[in-house]
Amino acid sequence: MKISIFYFSGTGNTWWVTQKIKEIFGEKGHLVELYSIEKKDLNWEELLPIILNESDIIGVGFPVYGSRIPFIIRDWVKNTLCLFSQKRKKKIQAFVYDTMAMFSGDTPLLMKRLLKKGGFQVKQAINIRTLSNLPQMKSMMTWEKEKQKKIFDNAEKKIRKFVDKIIKNKKWLMRRDPFTRFVAVLQRVTFIWEENRFRNLFTSDSNICNLCKICVE
Image 1 (cartoon, one colour):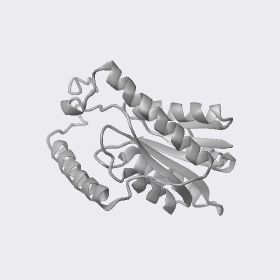
Image 2 (cartoon, rainbow, N blue to C red; image 1 turned 45 degrees about the vertical axis):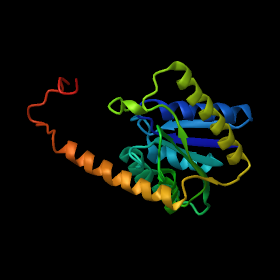
Image 3 (cartoon, rainbow, N blue to C red; image 1 turned 120 degrees about the vertical axis):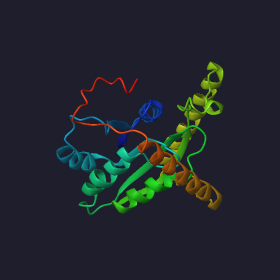
Image 4 (cartoon, rainbow, N blue to C red; image 1 turned 90 degrees about the horizontal axis):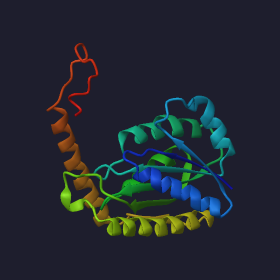
């Protein structure tokens, strides 16, 4: 079986999970190709039709941003991946995974819904806990090496179960209960408000910016 996985990783957690998925599929004799959607040298117009024709299953992985799908992969899936898949008569099997620090809400199901509109059949959509990358929220950070190892060990166990479900074509859809969806909506509204507030605090003048990056520091 040939699997193609498209992913976006902000700080490395999703990259690690994606590599682990490839490794476990490989142990079971399946071929996996990985594609970072951030790579600028990929010609999707030429590449995607070939990938979709040659793949038995495709996967989509991303980190969770406040119970939301990051714009970069949401827009790519909607405007690129689904655009090409809709031209195909046969539905392609797909799976979804996201990485989170504590709570992802119904985010994997949001991606499932988006892929379904593109003609994909999604039977597995889950979240996988990794490390928090929000130092401004100290209570969520895990500094001790032993605790970090435990988180990644548990993540690997979940990934192995995930891969097994995919191979056996069994359903595994997480975060479908009403309470989770309600909390996810609240979190999305809060983060959208916060994001807009911060966007209004910072501006840049493209006429005088020389990319010195002092403002970034």
